[in-house]
Amino acid sequence: MGKLTATQVKHAKPAEKQYKLSDGDGLYLLVHPNGSKYWRFDFRFAGKRKTLALGVYPEVSLLEAREGHHEARTNLRKGINPAETRKVAKQTQHLTDQNSFEAIAREWFNTKMCNRSKSHQDRTLRALEKDLFPYLGSRPITSITASELLNALRRIESRGAVETAHRAKQTASQVFRYAVVTDRAERDPSADLTGALKNPNKKHLAAITDPAEVGKLMVAIEGFRGTPVVRAALRLSPLLFQRPGEIRAMEWSELNWEEKRWEIPAEKMKMKQAHIVPLSEQALAILQEIHLLTGRGKYVFPSARGASRCLSENGVRTALRTLGYDNDTMTPHGFRAMARTLLDEVLGFRPDWIEHQLAHAVKDPNGRAYNRTSHLEGRTQMMTAWANYLDELREKALQNSGATSPNTAAEAA
Image: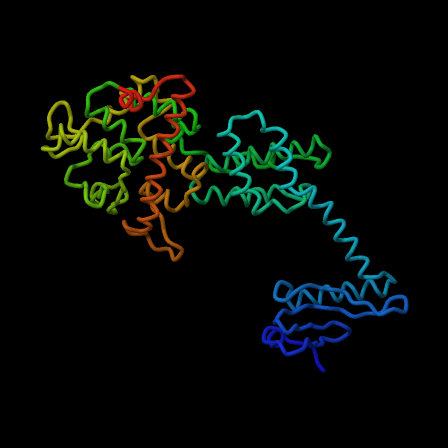
């Protein structure tokens, strides 16, 4: 009987009893009545018949089974029992697992991160589990090259999360250096990647992305006592995270109260595509409040110099400065970077949903641009979760400062 073919292996049907399909020289496929298929190699060593397991089909292909068979026969010719060789290999693998990137990274995390803030711990662990472990976790840390690490970081970079890629590189570097000082690696390969990643967009640098600091910012915004129009625009900016020019030019005719969404026409968008912004209950409450003052005009946020034009570009920026946030700390545009970072790294929402909600040019797997209603249900849930998360951060900041929420005080009164 000749050699097996891949088609014969694939279409081998189960029978009432298990049977063998021989590939020659002791290698065969053992087909069980339940349909499972096992690669086996029968051989004799020291006068005794033995069987070596070479894997399960289709996890191990015909070609891979033959490679394992060839290696076993080579050992036999050298007087080595291939079954013992496999046993030693498994023991060695156990030692390798203990020195894998994931094992050492988790040890580093438990040893070095215990005194860091909860938000910092969560962000670091998310970077490891989401962006590094899937590609480097099982690899022995001594064999990971700079090129392999760069490939993992490029995946983060490709979804537009450049700052996240830089932070992941820093985290990986700390893991490698921990391995060096514990005598399980000789060097940190991330040192070879200086300048390899894209530089973060400087327009997005003036943004607060640490959850604790975001909570303090939300407390400050809630306490702002400027004009009602500027206050409403400021309070909506983090909830909606659209471009500052789009927010201040919002028109009452663009609000779909029944569907609870803001529908921006294409001509007002940077990418010249119509855009939908789902409105959370918190956002709706702010809009309903300001509607009492400006609802009869065209603009939601009219200029103080006349209702025929919208709020100036310095309205929200000046409000932030009044609260103590200068251009090097937080800008109106920074609410976009804040949302993108925390929705990804803390709340774990899909990057394409986030990018689509930011009104960036996002394409589906077939290369087609998403239309304005794409993933609308998921994005609506995301916007609600985002608004609730900002409330939680504000309340936590108030508790830490010993102050009382204005809403809580009002209820108590």
